[in-house]
Image (cartoon, rainbow, N blue to C red; front, side, top):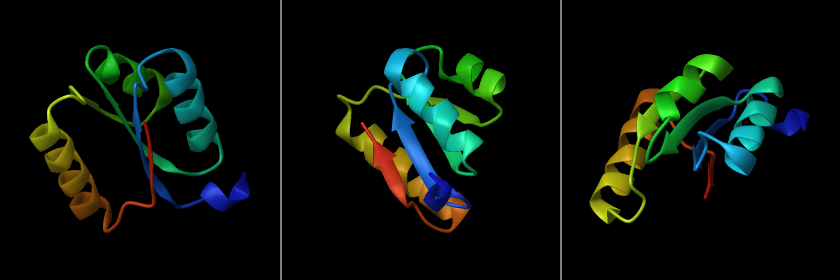
Length: 82
């Protein structure tokens, strides 16, 4: 998975389960990850050494702001895993 090196990714549902495992693997392979989840994202982000944000994916406006803010801060958004 070296093609994730220096890439940016948002992982929704990333505070636990499959999403957290995916975020962990992306980070291990060099990606800059934002964990987005309705709860627990900041705790998971501290554990994994990345960024986290609380996000309700049913709120379309909040999702768009999350994407826009992360892409602006990073210079781009390469991947979004939902």
